[in-house]
Image (cartoon, rainbow, N blue to C red; front, side, top):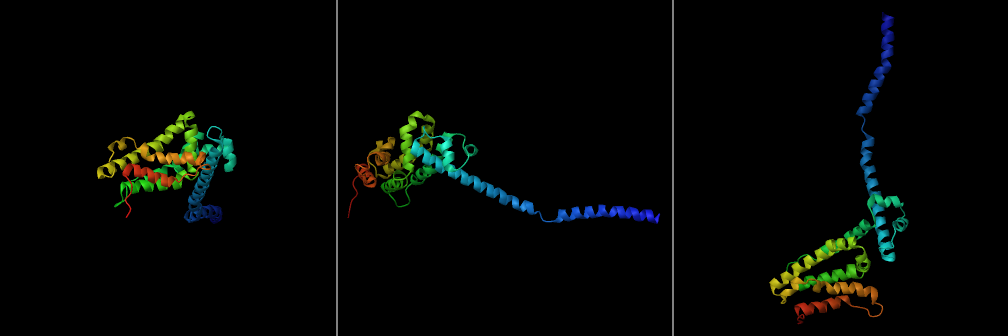
Length: 240
């Protein structure tokens, strides 16, 4: 009996050791779980970098080739990614172009068409809008996107509709609100101007088009042109 019990006890020792080992492992800190957030973060960062590379490559291709002639293969080659990678971020060429507008132009319009700061006149606010638009759009690569829409928009109504919805309509609404404020303050005499905010922003579009077509023949001081335009609306500034 004693020998039989001893053999049984000997056979049970490995089992007890396995149970103890499993318990010890269960109480150990989970190193792998601590690494998972870092792995996910690194993957997210790499995905964001690839997306940004694709957007930058798309901008270069669209500007150099035009919307119609640009191919996803060319964008992928310039971005240094496989063509399939593009489809992980964008469903087609149109959605990629929309993202360019959304990230390059929409924030500028939203930033410059708010109400004038305390103590500032409506004319001051419009002049600040002109300065910002000319510096950040009309004289930068962003202007090439605007010119592309003007040139090819009629053939691609989807991107024209997107640009109108995200940029033009919001810009006109902000400009109309500013004009109405100027009328209420007595700064603007012609109340009909609120119906046609396009009149106020016309020099900005002229600056974009002129810069690409005629600047080498007749350089345009877009800021002074806009100030002269504001003189026509508000009257000449008084100098002391």
